[in-house]
Amino acid sequence: MSTIILFTAVSLAQFMLAGAMALAAIRMFCGPRAQDRIIGLDSLYINAMLLLVTFGIGTGRVIYFEAALVIGMLGFISTVALAKFLMRGEVIE
Image (cartoon, rainbow, N blue to C red; front, side, top):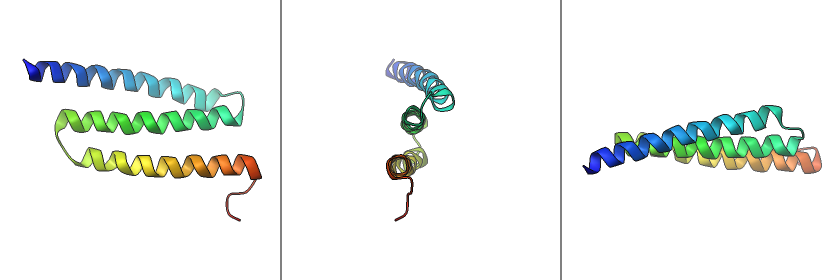
């Protein structure tokens, strides 16, 4: 019984995260300002990271958790770089 509940919960979470990724992609491509596009990108990488975590929970493989960690680190660095670029106009000083 618990495997059916786990499978249903993980499948539902994956479906909802895929929908959230679609909405974040729309915000990223059609945002009226650059700040909205950066927030869409930030939300997109967070949802992708969480989707990989749910894949890892569903399959039981460790590689998905490691990939989620890499996406989290690169996403944070890219968000900081884009925010710095919007504030100052340059990334490297």
